[in-house]
Structures are given as C-alpha cells and as structure tokens.
Length: 542
Image (tube, rainbow, N blue to C red; front, top):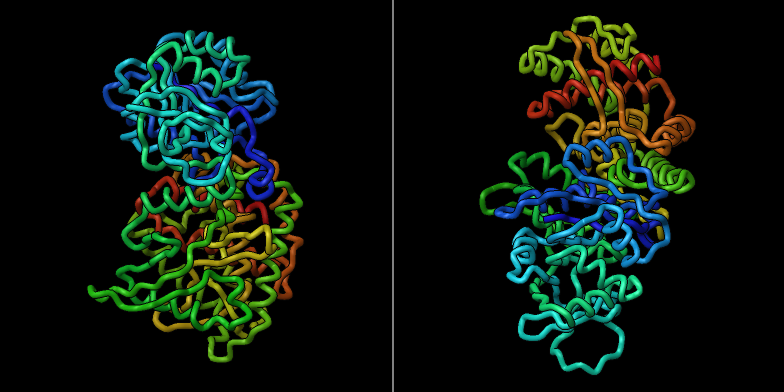
C-alpha cells in the first residue's frame, strides 16, 4: 500500500494572515505539525503493509531543517509539485513522477481522521473507498452521493444544485482508497485532471465503498482550523486540563498554585482583563482539589507561530508591539501590598535551590568551568552568581501588576483586535501567598526567554545538543530567517520603561534556564540543552 498526503498548495489568504504562508500539512498543532500526526496515524495501522509514504509540497516551499529531518526519519518521501496546479493535476503529477502502481491511499493535507476510520477505509473489500460524513457547515466541501453503502459520485461543492435523491447531504472527508493507482491516474486523464470528476468516473466504472464517519477534523478553513484544534486538544487532554463546550477547566494536586492562578484572574483590574482569558468560575472539587474555568481562546499560541508559522516580519513586529502595550499597561498599575524585592525573590533563592536539586538528581557538577561551541565560559554557578550580582546592583522597582509567566506558550495574539491574550498566570512570588504584583522586568525576561533564548525550540526538539564532557557542549538550533531576524530586532523593543536588551533582563533570562532544570527531570536531553543554552547566551551577551 502506498500513501500520498496531498499538500501541494498553500493555505488560503485568511490563514496566511494569521499563521503564514505554509502548506496545510504544515499547520501548527500543539507542539508539532499536522503532518506529523498524520504520519503517526498511518504508522499505527495494523495488518496493512505500507510500502511508501509520500508528501506533496509546493515547489516554492522549503521545509525547515528540523522538519526535513523528521520526515526523513519517518521514511517520508517529498515530491515538489509546480505551483498553481489544481488538486487533480497535482495528484496526476505525483503519480506520474513516482510511477506508483497498485493499491494507493490519498489523504488530504488538511485532514485528520481517527485510527478506526483510517483502518476501515483501508480494509475496503473491493479496494476502492471514499470516506464521507454529514456536512458540518456551509463550506465548499465536495458533495458525495451515497446509497446503500456505495459511493456513486460527487460534486465539487455541497452548495451546487442537484436533482438526485440520495438522502441526507454527505461530504467528502479527504481520505480515499484506490485499488490501483494507475487506474485512477487514467480516470484523472479522462476527466481533464479534475479530481472530483475522476472520483465520479471511477464510481461509474467500479464499485466504490462509502466509509461512514461521524466527524473528522478539517483544518482547511480558518474557522474549522480553530474548532478542529479544540477537538484535537480535547482528545489528548491531561488529567489537570479538560476542554469542553468552549470552556477550559484546570485543576491539580497543587491546590495553592491553582488557587493563586484563579485569584490573579479575579484580582486583575477591569481595564486589564482585555489581556487575559475570561474567568468563568473557581471552586473546590469533591476530592478537595481546586479548579477554575476560563473561556477557551480560539487562537494559536505565540509558541506555535514562532516555531511552526511563517509570519512576515511586519506581523511579528505587530505582535511584539502588542506584548509591549500589555506590559506598559501592567506596569502603570501599582500594587502597594506586593513585595518590593520581587525580582530577587523570583531569581536568587529559587535558582540556588534548584541548582542544588539538579546536582543531587542528575550528578552534574555545576561548579565545573564550561565550554560551549568551542568557547570557554565560567561554570554555571559562577554565571549564576554574576547574573545575580547584576540584578542586586539594579535600582529597585515599585511593584506593579505582573503576570509571572509571560512566555510564548502562554500568550496568544488576536490579529483582528491587535491585542494579546494571556493564560496561566503565576499569582504568587513565594509560592505561599497570593500576589497580583511583582517586577515587570521578570515578565520581560520571560518574553526574552522565548525570543532571544529560543526556549520554545528546545521544547519542540528543534535543537541539536551534544555533551562532549562534564561541562562541554555543542549546541545548534534549527531556526528560520524570521526567528533570527526577530531576535536581532527584539533587543531594541521597549516596555515598562526598559529595553529588552537591558543587562538585568538578559541576566534574568539566563537564570531562567538554570532554575528550570529540575522541572524537566524526565528529559535529560532537554536538561543538557538548557545548561548548554545558558552557557551559549552568557558567551554571546556578556
């Protein structure tokens, strides 16, 4: 069985404006791309031998090095198709270019189906199948004519007029099985390379089984992209986060942490609530865990856009300007009852405590002098001491509203309102008592942690890090030109009266990489990258 994932055109203009110029299979989905979940689903198939998995892409599109490596590791072949071809012409190009024969499945690049639907389609007795489902909305989906379990033909648009009595409206889901790729290529040739017409021609010549599917996730339109993301997230949710009916419910065993987060939403001044998710409720559960509910935000995180999007530089400047506007507005509201030494509380004690914990758990000696990418640097402990001295020598700031975890994964951008939305606030300085306030420079350092520190690239695995000896590393990131240019411009941005290139903010950013080490004990490779990156940033900045 050969598998062709069709993604040889770019997403529509609406999606380009919000995500960037990418093919549908490369759309961001959590901490990965849609195509990776499609490939995983194919590889989970049982009882079916997959000979080749082929992904079609526009000839003008160049995947990032990390994406190419993942596709190569999954044994996925890429066929680059001339830009501007119709779906049928694109498929015909792939079949001709590859010389495919025998059983073949086609999965559209904007479609994800469940494993049982995929298995049912590929198990069709006569070797031909179309997956169909009830029409979920007024979009331009292919209209399927189905009767007695058989697919009889299709129209290109469910909104087209027809006079066939075939019952309730069904649409083509985007998954097809053909007993012989060469036979379908002939159907395309005799249909002027029109994909839907070729399907109808095939159904006239041979029996095509209609595989019924109650629902599927379609990522091909802006609205369906966001609703499909909810469905996908709901299916993969963790015990402490539940998503249903447009509501996110967050709970956990760390009751105080959850309560502080909920209190932050409640205490945020009314005119600042435009920057946060809307709190719906907060209460104790029967098992004594605390839970709060917020309205689900139908937006991608900045982490997804930074790592997987292809936004124009001007759009990123708009996003960072919106972040700065939020930080300015937060910094304009004093919080007199918050501690005056917030930055010290959030860096000094926590860093030493976690470095010691990391040494005890990992066997690392953080007192050993380091070397990164061939450059000698002080030991992590010496670097931490120097960074803390910089922080101590800076002028104290009166406490103002602080989010406390102002990183890309907790930030979303609404392109229509040109405003950001924040989730998962900290709500405490010491972990013991609630605090709405803190030091705005800490929020700025968390943002720099993503832009300059490239934290999100480490989280998704777009980094190559080798530990050569006790404290010697080589580290390299799979970055895009946009990532690099954004980081170079970022230091000049200003918020809350400080530039992001300020030495105190940069010092705090480096300490963040050291203080988070024990939190990733399940990923020693990630811990190595955090240590190496702290050394790299020190060598580059100081």
